[in-house]
Length: 288
Image (cartoon, rainbow, N blue to C red):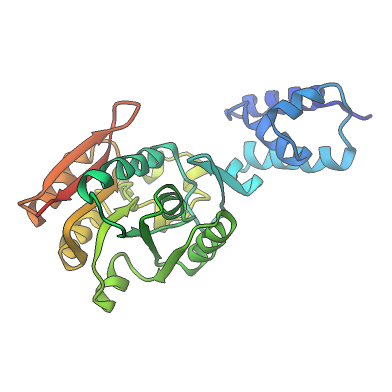
């Protein structure tokens, strides 16, 4: 029996709800399988769904509901700053909090680098390339480099840069090491490093814990290992003036600020809160 869009969506929403998943995911998956957007979906509300399409769609609904595969990995992309970024199991799925980090960087650049025709930026641990690509496209004065220790992640980031038309240099290596080895200095360092404490692993949703790369999630026992390394190595790569911007886990803001203040006692350190009122960004500004 041929099911129409309404019937298919009703089944999928109920199935997802019964398994504790967001019902809206049914719309995202059906849009993907029908090759349409939400408006197109409802315009076809009573149209029948081809059986082969339904079978692929139902299989993905079950993979998300039962096996906890993230929707973004099933459809192959996630939207970030108004642009679609390819994602797979080798990269972290971009999140709204990181959009706020990018916005914070873009807002601070004109004040700190007034009149500059070129600003050198490095996105450390680029993953999908969401931060690097967005910065490059939103501010054309930026010369952006992106680093990652994972060659598979760099492959995804390169593809996103090419598809979206961003000119970015890519370096493989651990955190700031590629720059240090080349004796390269930059004006801006931005990063969304791994910051989840290893002790919190058991509390994570299976959608995150079982599928997203652990190298992009966990930051040591207390979640601060990578910030300690940044505090140690940033003086080797930052010029003057300079900006360092980090996403942090909720509740980590003051600890990260203290690490940066110890490394840059003359700098201004700001802990910024996201739209949900959580401390999620730390900015370090060195003016002279």
